[in-house]
Image (cartoon, rainbow, N blue to C red; front, side, top):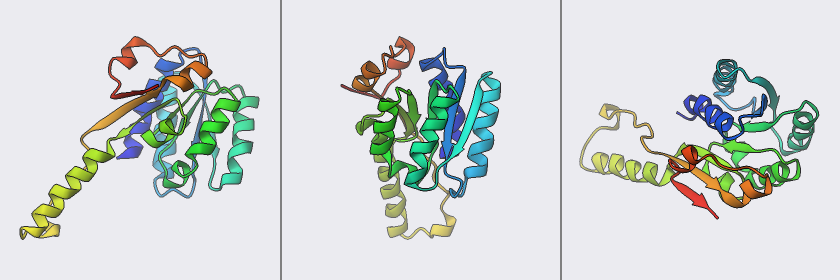
Length: 184
């Protein structure tokens, strides 16, 4: 489901930083859906008339050179795609985006609580509740093979106002109005 959200994240990032005509995206090429993520991000960037810089990171040592490339090529914003490896580096992302003054959007709230600017993705608390309902059905005798695949139904938009202030970004009222959480 996460890969289907990359276009929406890029759209939100463009609304947040409308003057950024060049946007970078970081993708882990080892992620199983990397090809789909790449295609979705490219299509969304084309639709928004944005120049896209795609870079890969599959180990922590790839991040610093990727950020240097973003800066050298004039990226005005960064999209971090969904990936368990990348989320494990959320503190490093917060540090690098602050150091290089690059506004970024992330797929999970964890990045924002670590100091990132904004995230849009599945609400994991709701997902855990849905998993409990699913397990309850199995414990009551339902056969797992007969149950439908459950996709996330609740998503959250989270902003970090401290990060916005450090980046000298004013969050548009249209985005703040739909935010699920604002970290001060």
